[in-house]
Amino acid sequence: MESIKQKPDQPVLPALPDFRNLGVMLRVLVVVNLLAVLTVLVRVDDPGLIAPALVLMAGRVELPLFVSLLLLYALSPRLQSMRSLPATAAACGIVVVAVFGTWPFLLRSENGSLLRWLAWALGAAGVCLMYFDYRSRRYSPALTEARLLALTARIRPHFLFNTLNGVLGVIRSDPRRAERGLEELADLFRVFMRDNRELVPLGDEIALCERYLELEKLRLGERLQVRWEVGPAPADGGALCKALVPPLLLQPLLENAVYHGVEPALEAGEVVVRIGRRGGELWLEVENESHNPSAHRAGNHMAVDNIRERLMLFYDLEASLESDGSNGRYRVRVRLPFRKEA
Image (cartoon, rainbow, N blue to C red; front, side):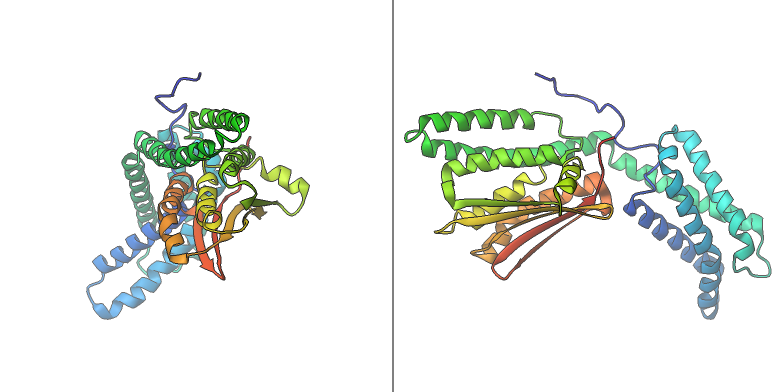
């Protein structure tokens, strides 16, 4: 049995932020523009001159800011492979290049100077880097790891209780089937005992869900119907199975779909799982019948919040989770970046 790792193989947070992450780019835009507004408010005493000064400042800030972000986006993999000090120096060098390259096109006042603006740009870059450094220390690797493990642990008791109830339901009528169910349960918990701090192939997550559903069929029998819609074509489905996703992403959603959409029904209930790719994004959807919409939303609150927080830890603002209950159906949609194994 593999021992539990005490430390990650590599730091969870790099020396510099991932400038290809949407959340990082938005934060840079917000921080730099706030600094520009504060600069105007400090330098201008006459309230009537604030609006023209803001327009002039925007004319100086936005073009080099966007050029810097484009260069940082293009060079982000290289920057993250460098050590902290050289990477910081390289990031500042990119800002200098962006300022020099855009200076002839900037909106300037009569007393504007290249050196003054360059100093301001480097100061803004320094503030941004200090902000991301503070944020990385606040959400340190140990804390992030602890939160991920705690969130994963919340899911396991629900799964264990449900599957044990399923085995108990057939242990007298069909002992051999109950034995197979316990073997499946043991296999599943071997998966749960792995290090869940890393992304896993979607194919492994689907296989895990199929085992879970087989165990639920011990209790529900033919009442549980599951329809998988993976990709528009078999070839795409094979590629989708190689996509990397957070561990235990689908299983809690399926558990809620079974509990709220199938168990309350007198007849067979269907759970639909849709998986597809749209450009550079992976889309997952779990849909089931909703017999009591208000109770369904309340019961799904913990699972949905759990997955939403884990998506935030893994992807920041690049991923989202939305739920919708209408027309007697309840749907949970997950959107995340499409990443494949190297």
